[in-house]
Image (tube, helix red, strand yellow):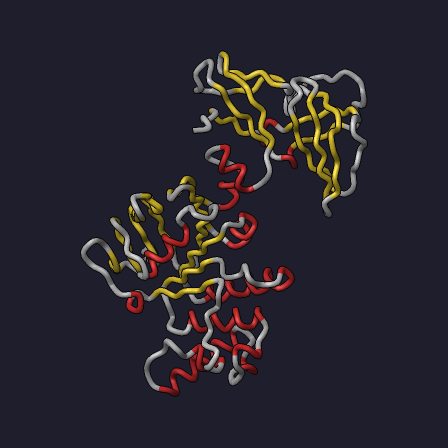
Length: 363
């Protein structure tokens, strides 16, 4: 029977500083070979959660297990070196006075021959075998990162905690080194908990994303599900730019420039936000200035005039002002499309790509 014990399990972790709760009832599990990303804005509690798991900070309440073994609650506290947890940070923290071999072997115990064999094995895996006797200052940033990975893997940790370890790398190197790192971690069967504030990095790397806000996990799931079924407007906005159409529910419907939208279960008189991403706003070039007809999929087309158009590399960003109510809406168009300010065009939106959320007060 396949073992289903999580490599890492945290349950109802809380932590407060000066009366402010920075980690608020956080629970999650990470299986062997799985990459889970703690994603959220700066100050939302991601790094504090990692510090608690690592054992360098103590939670106020909650429990932590590593490979089924309780390592910390309000009574038991296994020290950091006894938790089988590896750490990788943005600062590689290599010892400048030690060689590459010395850095990788730093946390190893046992016979020297066995240590040397483990060091050589790992350096070959990260393609740095020829630098075994070099010093950190002789390596590039990407090479130093791979030494840090080898050092973290050397004791064969059950769990690897990574706090934005790739953010200091050159963009040209980052993707390749990031992918190679995760491949090695998965091959080792290590459970990875990665902290980042960059949605693209989380989408690229994670098997599962835990979206944090204000110390809490507000949504958790596979990247596809988190992106395509956000729990609220803020969750949608964290992953991309959004357009917001404001409305008020009457009879489970909301009137907009694009026709009526269903709002099932929302009480009459409730203000709502209809959210759609710019890439799902379609410009109907075939209509020109002719009067539009509604369609089942896209609803009623809306007339708008161009406010501004910019080319941003792979696509163009076009900002419109809707005739219906004067509100602004942005569309992205592949390649170069730079219409002049004041150009009238018809816009369509994909109903199945829209999200309807009751509007929250600014407070």
